[in-house]
Length: 219
Image 1 (tube, one colour):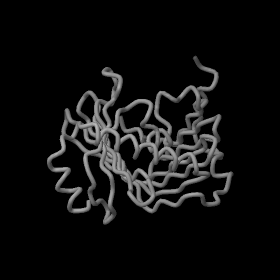
Image 2 (image 1 turned 90 degrees about the horizontal axis):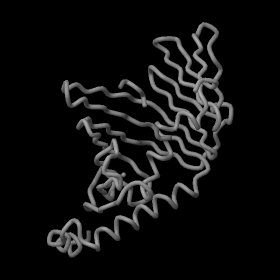
Image 3 (image 1 turned 30 degrees about the vertical axis):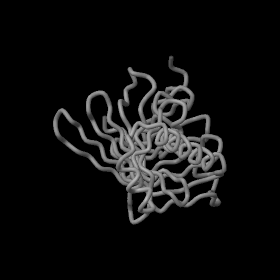
Image 4 (image 1 turned 45 degrees about the horizontal axis):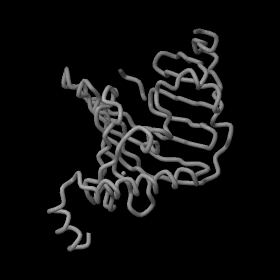
């Protein structure tokens, strides 16, 4: 469980009397998601700082992790936190625990029961029905707040909210609630898009003193 794993006055007044599940809001929510997807489709690379907070409902405990994420076309990504580094070149994924000095190596297509970062940030249209809740300020920026309702009634994530930056269509905050009422929150800041990234950061050089667990040949 420790896996380290975005009105005008008339519009505002109008929104007070418009039911949240009305066709107008549903259509607007879909339009926003289309813009988010269009934004992703045009990206060649991305770098951002993030904070992930996980609240365990059963024990009432909370854990927060800060880090940096790098994305590049072709399912390349690198996630760095104080305790962990996760790297993939699009085929192989390395998960390095600094505390345990252990590297787990696996094939990316075998490990996709865990969402890819790009799916977390951009993939909503296939698995969720978006409902616009309204326009809110977040980090001093205007964002669209949407409620995402899973199409699968048995989905592990039973509800999700996102905050989408109205100026650039980036998802800047994600709040997920799972079937156990645990709350997982991601906040992204200092987003830089279409920058030049050194391709070597998507290859992981295993430290000499690290234990290696290779799962690529396992069933």
